Image 1 (cartoon, one colour):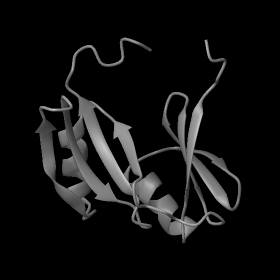
Image 2: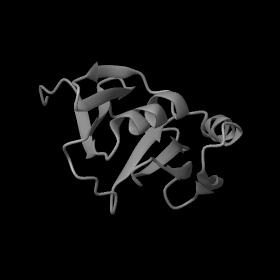
Image 3: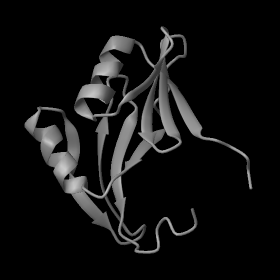
Image 4: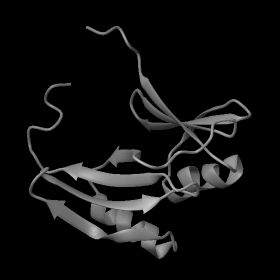
Length: 124
């Protein structure tokens, strides 16, 4: 047992208001904590994404993955709202997932994915 209570991934951003609008309005994540220079969003039970203006954005090599059962519906809603996405949802046989990508205002790659393996999550 790790004794941990949660997990936060912090990313830098150049405009906290613009980044907040993307994660709150476009992706629908609830704001958990507003620290002024940083805002932390609830992604799932115990999992958080934090964005801070005092951290330099470095989107290369980073993928923020949000796991959801309704990948196609989320894609449709984003497209309807005019949010740019990187293609249609696709199934990957190699990883047994269905997913699509988009970029946040600072260029961080965001993936919305569903695990198609029925055993996903049985470890937790």
